[in-house]
Length: 454
Image (cartoon, helix red, strand yellow):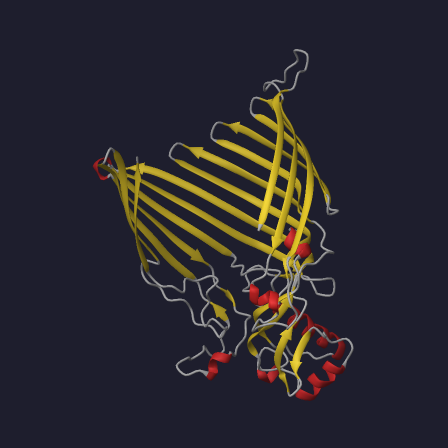
């Protein structure tokens, strides 16, 4: 159970300058204070309270709770230096009763040299404080899929973790440069973004712990192979020697009778990752036109290009560029195709309208497991030597009829389909058997909706 009480006090208006005014007009300001009282209570199920869970330890879990108070102060200024040149300044200070605090300035400038062109630039600091659950949650266990680089294990195992009271704020510094073009029925916006995160708050999973242990093994022994396939994995004796080494991760619990079986992975929790730096370009364009008696059309394009995504999971890990990669081996970066785009086409005539969205995801190298426990089940044929996550294109479409008058009100009926052409997801050696994070595993789905306003 969570509760949040908020008190906001905001004063806004023009800054009195004794009759003086900038060429663009008066300076507008907003000054405010916010108080937040945040509480939560975590009540485990009766089975967890009794210590009788099927997955996890035998220790009884307990009811836990946490709370904190936050004081926040802010000032925002809009300074019209000229009629077509505006400067924006802001600063915010937050103080948490749990020990975190942050002061974050931001400034931006907007310049419109022509009626159809606007140039933009901003820079600002920001932060995210750890959630109360991230700080105080008790240790609990559940299922997690892991792939072992030391042997053939690739399946579910027990993963246990809880809150991390040592978490600090995630901070970031970001810059944006962009321009907007508006030419009648056509508009275009392009924005370059760069954000540098420090101490990013991420959930570390069992696979991260497995990957780091294998990396430490490579650094300690000079083992050069990557462990992805059986031919590139260390021998059983090398694994036994590593388990006996004090440098190995004791949070990985292996079956004493079969060291290639992972029984449990501990300390899966939330941590402050060392660094993440993201650079991307966002593009948005729209065009509207009419064909007389054939109705009105609109075409829109939204696209994102990721130039780089540098991340470092912890201080002992190398900095890696995850842009354009599947990133199966880490939770510090998601799947990051270089290009993602949505093309929308809409048509309206009278009470009728049709809308379509075509979604595109770029291809990327595949770095997940090449073997799976599903090999032991009949009827499953895994891809052999998979090295690429292929491009994905999916169309969603809907038809709407509006203006249905009934019972003194008005209704609208919609018939639509997601994944209209029933495209099948790419098969994968992963536990799910498909590339489910980027591609639609459900196939075509059809829906109908009726909205009535009265």
